[in-house]
Length: 304
Image 1: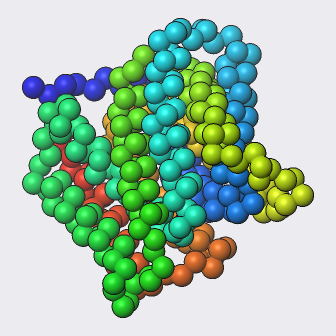
Image 2 (image 1 turned 45 degrees about the vertical axis):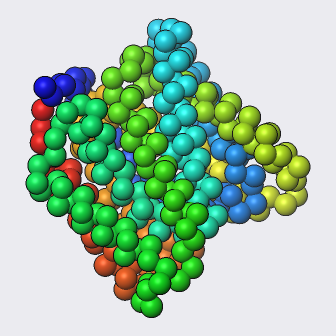
């Protein structure tokens, strides 16, 4: 028997604004991460990013006198922060040491496929034949994009980056579905702030454990990395992630996941225009397959 997903109501204007923020802002964060980790220690940078953004959001919720979180709220925030930010964002950040930001964004389109698989396995929402075709097309696109033996594709794609992004999309799907039903504060500011604060602490622990403090030298931090860090904090985290948290409570996960076929377009263009990342004919064909697969999946997924 199919389990019904309960969603809270929201105005059309807020939903449009939230979708626009997730579509556009998150498409630019891949390039932001690329520049930030050029001279900033990745885990410590992420820890400071999320502690700063999370602290600001939590303070806003407190200023608005939103209800205080309960113990179960904190427990769920730790789980969500781990899967979305440590597993999802953290692994993507690591993977971008090995692959371009545009390729990373294209591989992120695998996330809706994981959503379909997880809903099928754990919530008995069986995909239609069209969805299965979409999944096959998506896998074909990934194979074409990451085939290192092709004479027409990109030759320097590192398998470590490919595996990393693939695992990150699974983590993101798990965290998103868990957040859908987990008890959390009703305030998007409070909920998002808690998830970022817990993830920020975890990132600092990871950075300390792997010895990143010895690489902290302010004189070596480039202007580009600092600007990218500030962009990730105030635009990517505070605005973008808050919008995503809002959507998880007010829109079906298959609709929310449509950001995956808008973000790559933004990311590929920015990577080409700003970072001089190469776009081959095979990359274009693979991107059409991947994005087309996500359109099929999110459009034809059987509603409850």
